[in-house]
Length: 178
Image (cartoon, rainbow, N blue to C red; front, side):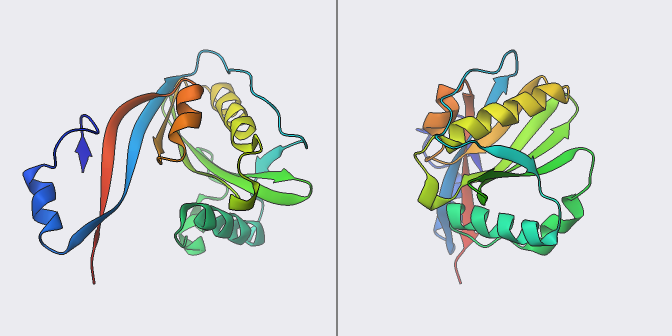
């Protein structure tokens, strides 16, 4: 369910969900950025190497890292069909011989959608996310995308705003309680 503004009161549908055994486990902000020029970034202390996930072993590591960062389990079998698709880039970021971040870019027309951008919780606040974002924006531009869209968690909002992403709407996600 989405709201035009984060401050909008719950709709009648939302009130009905909440009183019928549903919970609101998290909220995201849909954001967009025109890809006119990639902004500079502060590089992490150690080089960050961004490349495609190459096999199922790396995909399992990717899913575990992303899941740990977001606090939920990711089914590797749901990701396998994405490997090798021309419009999809399942990317890993490696630093000091360890996978430290993940991202998934999906090209649709002139838009690049960013999904599952995450940094290993033990390596956050080291400039990895900023360096990865700059590289993801560069890759999107090279692919011909004119804009990038994403759904930001509250933790990611400051980074995306600093890089020029503009909020479009708030997305409230609901989960049926057992």
